[in-house]
Image 1 (cartoon, rainbow, N blue to C red):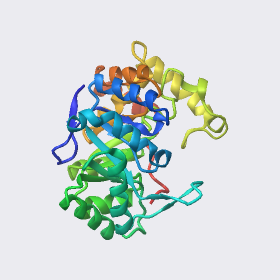
Image 2 (image 1 turned 60 degrees about the vertical axis):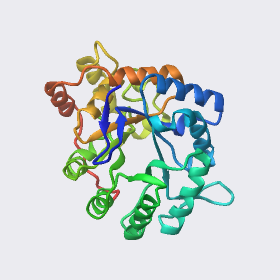
Image 3 (image 1 turned 30 degrees about the horizontal axis):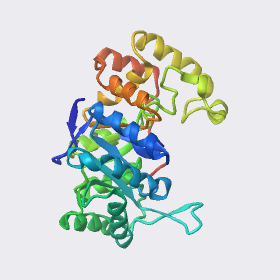
Length: 307
C-alpha cells in the first residue's frame, strides 16, 4: 500500500484509510475488519467521539493497541450528545474540545492522538478560540497534529489562513466535484492535504450502480443529478472506463489523481470489502485522457450553500 505525506506533517498515510464509523458495535467483527486492513497495509484509521456514543473509539483502540506506534490514529470532536442521546449539539468551544480529548484518549487507550479533527464547523464559530484549543493540545503532547472535517469553502479558507491544520476531510467523488474549483487548489497551495470521504457516492459509483439506489435517490436524484441523469451517466462511465476493472476502482483512482489528496477514507462491512478497496487503490492510475473523459461526462458544480 502506497503512502502519502499528510500536509506538511511528519505523518504518512496509506492511500486507502479505514473509515471506522461503519464498523458497528460487534467487537469481534470490527476487529476482524481492522485486522484485514492492517494486513493490506492500511495504516490510517479514522473514528470520532460521536460514533456509537464513543463505543467506536473503544473498539478501534483495543484493536490497534498492539500496533499503536505503526498506525495513524485520527478522531474528531465538536459534537455533543444530548443527555437523552437522541440528538447532538454543536460545540466548538475551547473548553469542550479540551475536555473531549481526555475522554477520547481514555476510550482509545492511548496517550496521544495523531490527528485530531474538528467534526464540522461554521463561519459563525469562535474559530480563533478553537485553533487555540488545538494548539494547546499540541503543546501538551496530547495530539500530534490537527485538521478539520468540513465542506464549507469559507470555513476551510479561515483555517487555511489562520491555523496550522495539516488536513481537511471532505466529500469528493466523480459525482461530487464541488471541491475542485475552490478547495483543492487552495489547500494544495497551503500544503494542506485532503482526506476524502463519500468516494463511491453511496454505492452509485460501484458495479451495483443504481441497483441498490435508495428511494430518496430514486425520487430526488443525487446532489444536482436527477435520477434520469444518473441512469444515463453511470452506464456511460462503466462502459467507457470500467470494462476491465470495477467502477469503484475508477472512483478511487479519480480521487487519488488529485495531488491535493493524501488518502481516500472508505468504510467497510467485511474483510472482503477491505481487500477490494486495497486492490482498487493499487490499480493503474487514470490517464489524463480518462480524467478528461470523466469530467466531460459529469458536472463541475460549485458550493452554492454550505458557506
